[in-house]
Image (cartoon, rainbow, N blue to C red; front, top):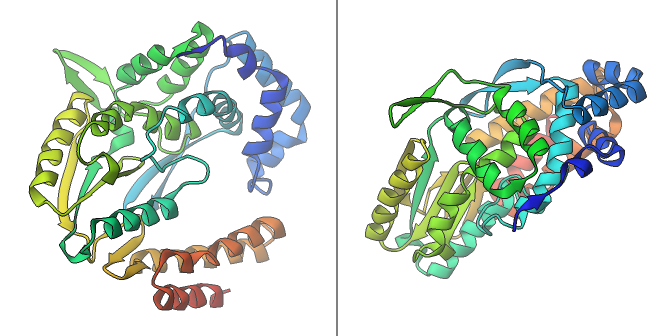
Length: 342
């Protein structure tokens, strides 16, 4: 089954308006959003007209560096472009979400890092003696800068039979170039999708679908968790994980991606901001330190009237879910420290 004749739905007034409402959540205090909202009706009508006539041209990106804890360059598009990305997401995501592997936890409603962490803990418990459980961690090197744009376009063409939609997606993909090249069959292929685009989160799961499908028929199918470009396999057999690591390197290499593989004991293993133990899970210390600094910044923004009370309250409430990760004494102390930093 493929997605057909979706451009009309994508460019409908209802979808453009819904895209605006979803995009502006938590951003209404931003200066660029306020400027766009000042002439909202005219701006949305102009944007819809450009998409309908295929005159839409993506703008540039504002780049900045974050440390979480790895150093990452985020490329933020303009407000106009972000509304287009949200409109594309509204139409494409429901279709692809039904086809993603159940083991994928990134950029999907009702999932996320907490759900992925708890899934890994359930797998370890099912394996029995957790002191003898090993974890294979597969990490793609500079994933978003390494994605082959031609390969991504080819995968999208297999699933979408609507020329206008494909042309729009091609413009979004071509709006960014990491400067890296993939040499395949003697031909240099452009790489890169921007880390910061909503569509890039969807593209991440789409381009890794072939890798997910190679896992389905293996003995590790029920012990696999993927969050974005980080994949985890759990097993009591070290050799089994070594075989999967070799397969992953070959399969991802065929997609033009380079990956690092590491096999470590489950006990003391750190991933997705958590540390795993035989009897539970705790928040990693680096994550706790970043959380305290982040909440301090959010609090300053609120008192400087750069954040609404609703947005500030939603941020505060998110910290109250910390004990769900397991080791209650440890996470409770971190939670108190974070909330006490207000």
